Length: 110
Image (cartoon, rainbow, N blue to C red; front, side):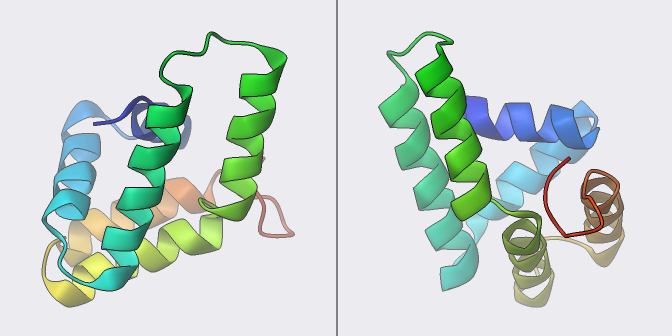
């Protein structure tokens, strides 16, 4: 699990088992939606790996969340994983509910 995914899972309130199932499903995905998202996350994390928690890093994370990991995009990945058979509907529902609990009325992260 990448540092960004770990941070997101904590932010959403996923426990370790839920977070592991989610990331393993993303890793096993063969369809383009989840694979492309995973690649973006991994590349983003590789770019931040040497950086410390600086204002620039925080800004970069916020920009990434707004452009590549918005709630709608994350929910799209979850649904793609269910359709592909990589994530159970029960696990997906749990993740979706936790993600939606962290979204404002305009559909952005709180």
